[in-house]
Amino acid sequence: MSRLFLKDPLAVLEPAAAGGIVVEDGRVAELVPSGGAPAAPVDEVFDCSRHVVLPGLVNTHHHFYQTLTRAHPSAIDKELFPWLQALYPIWARLDEDSFRQSVRLALTELLLSGCTTAADHHYLFPKGLERAIDIEAEEARALGIRVTLTRGSMNLSQKDGGLPPDSVVQDEDNILADSERLLNGLHDRSDGAMVQIALAPCSPFSVTKSLMQQSAALAERFDCRLHTHLGETEDENRFCEARFQCRPVDYLEEVGWMGPRTWLAHGIHFTSEECRRLGAHKVGVCHCPTSNAALASGFCPVSELEAAGSPVGLGVDGSASNDGSNLMEGVRHALMLGRLRTGSASAVTARDALRYATSGSAACLGRADIGRIAPGLQADLALFTLDELRFSGAHDPIAALVLCGATRADRVMVAGRWRVLDGQPVGIDIARLRAEHGAAARRFA
Image 1 (cartoon, helix red, strand yellow):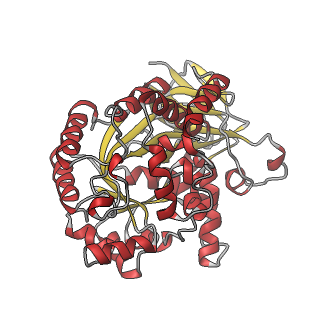
Image 2 (cartoon, one colour):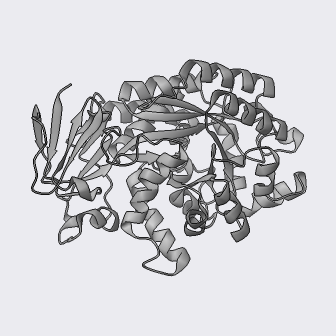
């Protein structure tokens, strides 16, 4: 149980740690004020005078497998429904080898961007890929990154009036049985957990009402989170009104999902009254600014949701709609889109955008042990330097990370262990990963 002192950071998001942070046994043991010294002896000192220190970023929505279909000619320049219809048949060709490569690459990218906890929404289980969530857990453990792996699902295909083709859906019994298997085998509810499981029927246009209700009952039984896409497009609103005779938020309440166990992806097309309802029930929302802009889906009403009481986190979304897995870039996009939506340069500050990606995201995942720098919390930290030309002349180091466009962390710590050193992921040969992933992706051309 050695004590590591991260001494004299250039800047740190937690003001009480201006003099540094002591890490012991995977946790933050002590915050040192400016000009102070640790209260007890330390075994190692790391000079942080070049580094801006943030809590590890927390990604609350992704689709790892989509790294295989970035900038795909079949889907470029399309909005959500035609975009999905173009890619579903391509994604149906996923197998274990290509999927593993997609997961490894996505998690490595996230780590390099300062992300220490990642949630993935995986809902495609073509024949031969039944162990998808197990593979994700294996890859996350190998990299040393925390994950919330959502056992996604689709059981409403085109023949039943849904959006996905028949080849990529499963029946309800198989979905629920596998969900229970994963909850029994992988879901860790303890403080400092490295792997947690959530249940995530994909969207109103790809699952039945019964599956939503049964998933909510299973989540209650196993004390896990619930996740789904909601409020992403006007097409979704029209689908819900035609099929369920109600708007998506009404549907959410009808199937028993309106509560603090739930966090939603996107949350764009909510009325002011719906924002108040979601906030009153503490339903979390993952803001996906890059994806929302790429697909021209709209603007998430972040300030209204937060004011109403909803936790708001940040997500990169799938790599085929974002075309990247860089959460630090997403922080900057959240600031820019927030200001554009409100028409006010003060509406979203750099520290607001960083809050979405740290404590806000942690709240969406139901975790009180990450997302902040405080004694007793997990030692998950992202350290950035300001050595690049883009930062020259910057006077507020924390604001500079967002406004000047930081993209890559110099060091990343998860549970007190360095997982990125000098801008390189520990134990990963990036050139080899690029070559192997690129070879796998060529099969989806």
